[in-house]
Image (tube, rainbow over all chains, first blue to last red; front, side, top):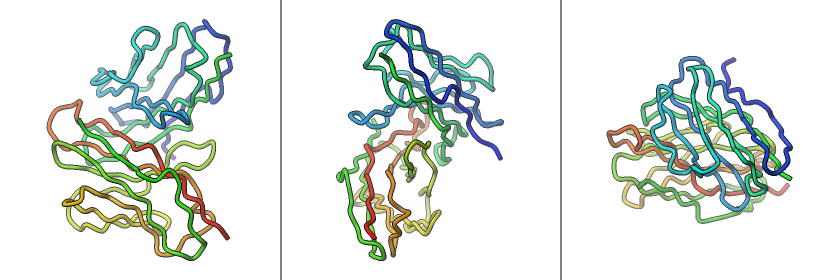
Length: 114
Length: 117
């Protein structure tokens, strides 16, 4: 059945290293969301894409984070350089652009920066 | 700007009793409201949504939610709780106003539901 696929599921990296997280949205979905989940902040919206163009990335720290959609089947979230405070679970969700539709979530990437 | 508030960090209920998880929202346009559930080490799963029409919306696993425009609330309910309902529940809103950026999906902080046997 159709699902959002995120890779890797787990990532442990050292501080200062580059981290790339990938998301394959459900075929036909042209809206992609990136969220970060932590105990302290809950679910924060980092970036929001429609038709591969960023509509809103105001929640994303610009100095070290970047999000792109090289094509309709791949969304990426990069952190460079990574810091321990970036440790969190990162979720990708995809959906349709109309506001009355729900988004479908991937299983998440659990990132640990040591 | 749109926002969602879930005033309770945790709700405790005995199995078989009714449950309510509270949610209030703020949007500038028409509100489209959603409930999601998250089990440990899993992604979020969609439960139900309110778009328009009947204020009582029914969803998966016996859950329902009541939309109240005057109170700007969208509380999640279930007549009889199960131990297996124990999970983290998130309320979310999309603003129905025109303009791409306003259609983003914003979540509340989540409410942990604990159902005791």
